[in-house]
Every structure is written in structure tokens, then in C-alpha cells.
Length: 152
Image 1 (tube, rainbow, N blue to C red):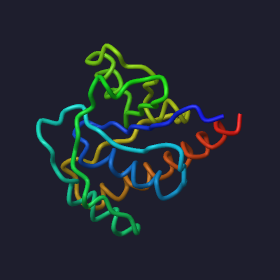
Image 2 (cartoon, one colour):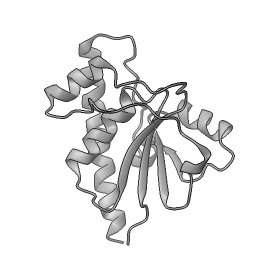
Image 3 (tube, one colour):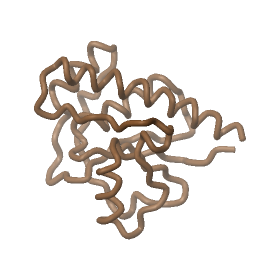
């Protein structure tokens, strides 16, 4: 039985790690019945994906070139939506700032990983690529978990 209708990846600005996670999950797992999006905790105005993040996505045959950052809002929370922050600090901030927050986990927490991903902001292209590779491994595990949950 399907647990969620929507999955929201959340990062600080929704310009690098969360859109990369969205692209990876959409490619790796055709979860047709789950809407996959990304949003940010601090989005003052819409911004495109970080050019380094897009370059790394392109090198892996993915793209989010049309992505524009969006803020996470109270209306995004309901019992059929899974909200996954990229790290535990973001989760803590989200829970503090959103009264109606439910079904909120860090990605690492949800897949039972030992460590959080590091945001490559300000780093070089190699750092963005290392982040992509770590994110890809975690998102693949997430896809496996979501498929298993659908079958229970």
C-alpha cells in the first residue's frame, strides 16, 4: 500500500542539493504515483539551480535547467506528504519554523545512514560532484525503501 502521494526534498535555498536529489529520484525510480519536488527553507525570490549543480547533473545525463527555487510553506505538510531535509540541522530548523510540520525526516535519518550530506556551496566542481555521488547513493537507498513500503 502506498504511504505517500508526495515527496518534498528540502535544502537551505533549493538551488543545489534538493533539486539534485529530485532529479536522481525521478531518474532512478519511476514512482509514478508519487509527486517528487524540492523546496527551500530560505527562498526570498525564485532562483535557478546553481550552475555547478547543473553541470554535475548534466555530466550524469540529468538536468534541472528549468528549476526555480520555491519556499517550503505550511500548506506543504499533510499526512500523505513525506518531507526529507538534506541534513539534520535543516530538519531541526524546519520543525522550529513550521507548526504544522509532520512526516519530516532528514534523508540520512529516513534511510538510516550514519552521516549527513555536506552542502557543497562555495566549493569547486569536484566538491559538487562528490556531493552528487553521495546523494545518489542515499537517494537510491531511499527509492528501495519507498518501493518496499508500497509493497507492504
